[in-house]
Image (tube, rainbow, N blue to C red; front, side, top):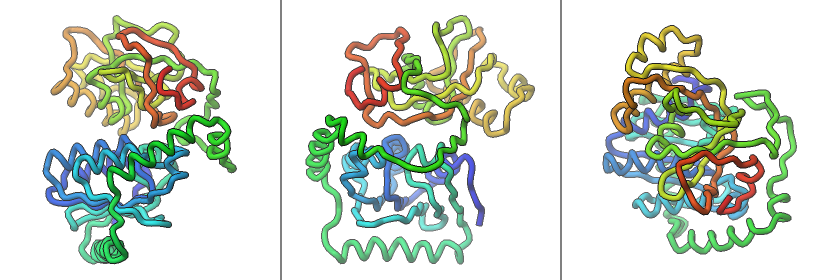
Length: 330
């Protein structure tokens, strides 16, 4: 048994990536980013995957869980079962190892919230969890046909879209009371703060995966402050806003010796290392120039994925409020 309180996203997806047969996800709430990463692994290896989740309208309207994520699962032949009052968070890999704890299957839970997961690998530890998930799934089937369909998703999307147009409903649903402890930064960010938006094309997945962005050091962004978002190819959709923790300049072709000399934590160095390796294999780095690397932390997922009416390669500037107001175009 191992208690995990840091790097939850990396630890969870490391287990998913080494699965060979099956995955079971039991999570009240689901996020678009985490579901897409799950689907990538399921499709790559042809895994059998079952997801148990809530189908609560309020959660969809206020953004706690994603209808689009469930639709994506269904479109990729993943079985999705609905269970009222679900609170368990359980992840089972090949019926041999599992994780249990407080973290929902959303990027915010795995990277921003204060959460715990317990990794279980011994047979005597895993067996009770397998019995729990097997019985849970069997009981759902016994009670009737509670498998979520694409038709249900489309109907709920229409209802959700009708509600999100009302600012009054949004203000009611977004109410939350309690102390706020930002584990990444004590800086208070207001809705008028400027967010730089840049086009990253083929490296967008690497940014969201490793919370690292890089560009040639001879090309800098004007009016860069603390917040940044990234436009994807084919329309310029923006999936999240990030806080720039720091920047460093590295030669990606001499990164090993340069990385060793940096005054960063092991986890940050590991993220930079993996970003460089994966980008070198896929998108690549231009030679023979140095690159400026941005160390990022997540501020807010943009589940509605706003985009400009006309996309281009140049920088754009928005306020944080512009990006959070749920409009399709900004």
